[in-house]
Length: 459
Image: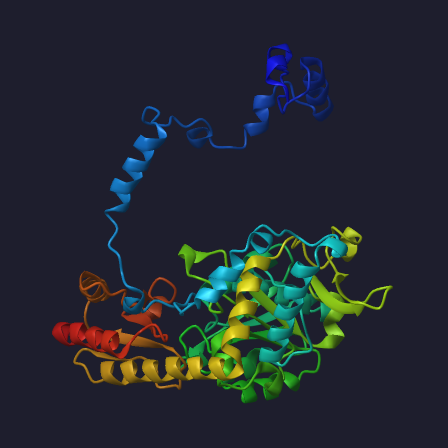
């Protein structure tokens, strides 16, 4: 642009609302109202026009200083001093993961609509799918989903589409937030959800037998479950398979697959989970990524999309979006999901992470988590006023019951710079005196002993 001609440029009003008053009157008349404000009558007056007590505007420098003062009130906790879990886990992330995902071509990539210019994105999504199939033992996996909760809810919707039944058996040992998401997805589907109780931290098999019948679309469990316990998957599978049309849906914690049987080996039909533990930071709850895998015969009902490898017209290897069962690509009545974009950057991080640590590394990682969690649990069980709530075998999480006030215990730990666990009374009223403790490879033996010292003082 020639700067000398700048004065000749005219400022044009490019407002977003381009309708004239005449246009607006016509629109209002068409929908049968006289004033646009009546569109908001459904909003309670108490919140429709709130008076905001906002301070006067600040400069960038002043805002930065103010935020730094607020941020200084936070009490930092070291990675090895966090014992929180419940679906979000603190694992070590190799530097290579962040270095590669930070490359601008990956970092800014969007949905690969045009295969000819999206080969890199399509390839790493394909690799991610391959990793998920290898870990779960399932035939196919889609190109990732939002998180573990929505992934499980989509599995339930898929089960209903497959067999047309309207009854879901959902174990209470499944992550409470996952269960709540399933209920939200199904609230307009005229589907009955039957929640099955637990016994000693695992699904009560007697309840399963009493409730399963020919009307059941699916049985949903989590393994290891929310309490960290291993479910009796072989017995559960046998019960389910006695009802031929009932599907077996399993939510899994991916790191545990390094040492336990994959879900395919015990008859799972659909496998879901959250891939956060695979190279993704905690990030205050997101973004995470869900994974979804199933048997090949369900291919055309899988939500989202699938990337496949093929050969182009010149004989070169190429990657394309193949099955795209969403309303953006097919008739809305045939769409299986409204998922429009997957968390592909998070899926890339998971693929890089798995390629770095490999099969042996995942097994070793899972074993470390298992051993350290069992070490801490055994020691806690010998401290006065503290004991393990359940005696079932567990992976890297376990439930501690105490005769002390839960708030007091967790506050004492916090004062020592330790995030001690999750209060379970918020999710399970009957476990109001219990908290969930999670252990990963980030928790050194020294940090485990420091945790025990604080509990010993309380006990």
